[in-house]
Length: 105
Image (cartoon, rainbow, N blue to C red; front, side, top):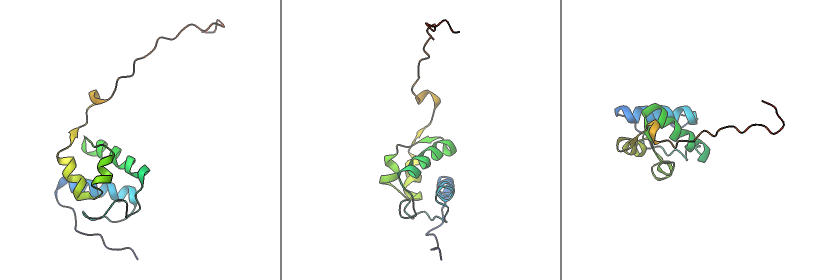
C-alpha cells in the first residue's frame, strides 16, 4: 500500500509543484515529501527543473532540487527565482555554408 502524502500544498506555487512532482514520480506528493525518497533521481531532477521553467516561467539551477528536494523548499526558491526569458539563452551564431568541393549544391 502507498503511504499517504504529507501536508497538502497551499498557494499556487506549491500546488503547481506538487502537480509536477506527481506527474514525474507517479505518486501522491505532500509538501514535505522528499523528491529523491519518492523515487526521483538526477535525470528526473533535470526534467523537474525543465518542467518548472515551462510551467511557472522560473529558471532554477539543477542544484536547487538537491538542496531543497521538497515541494515547499522549491516553492520558496520559485518565489525568489529568476523569470525565464528567451534572451537569457545563449545565442548560437549561424555559420555560412561553404560550397561543396565536389560541386554538389
